[in-house]
Length: 330
Image (cartoon, rainbow, N blue to C red; front, side, top):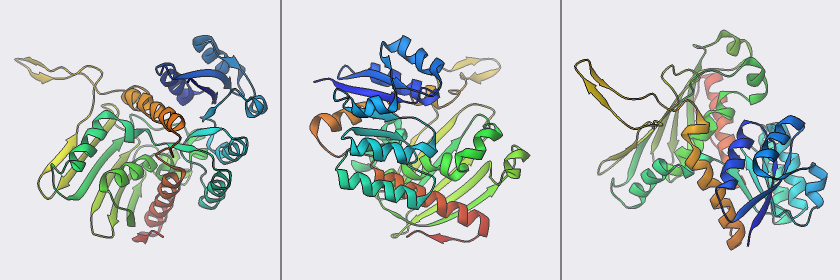
């Protein structure tokens, strides 16, 4: 069986997913949809798929599933339409920037029984999964503290900030999900601080470019997240989990892992430049997991509910940063 997929959105992340689909022999990209014909044509030329429309994909009985990589404000509507059409759905995070709208969308998914998977790709990174395996195998005992460092090489343009939902919904939302993945418990309180240290225009738009967050579970486990929109040395992605018997960590990855030693000291190549190269393996494994769920008829993970929880945590972090209080998560 070959799962036939349509890609909705041919932008930066759409191109990443097109490559991931091409790497799985069980999947075939048969259609691409984008408002910009040139973007769709580039993927069509590279993969051999057809250029299509939303309506045509909805009614095509030969298309099994869709990969939604369109702007965030379209996600909920598209999920509902394709759920009602009986297609399996993979959607980039978040479902929506509004919790109530996201919940309404999830209700439609439940009513239709559609399969949906949210694009929290970091759960599938081989290094982060190895950390989780060390936890599951009991190597570090009971998890007590998680430390997550997540810093982008540079700030996005103001035009993006305006529609992103802010740093907590756009950037930290990935860290909220991986924190839950590693803590093994739901988070009950959030304390966050935010500053504007990188670009004053970000502050003028009501957002932060630098943030620190402490998450706490009911049992007292903690996760600490460090975010910045600027890391001059590359895409900084590190995690450490401290437990009762020891710790386990995933260090930064480089395109080439070598170290040169001379009389001047030790040097290593620079880090990956951004998520497209750092998480290539994670994106491929993510799509493979989605295909697995379709083939075996099981519920995909991360679920829409996981996406809703991450969005609630983002809202709590924003409230905490603005009001300078600890926010309880309902």
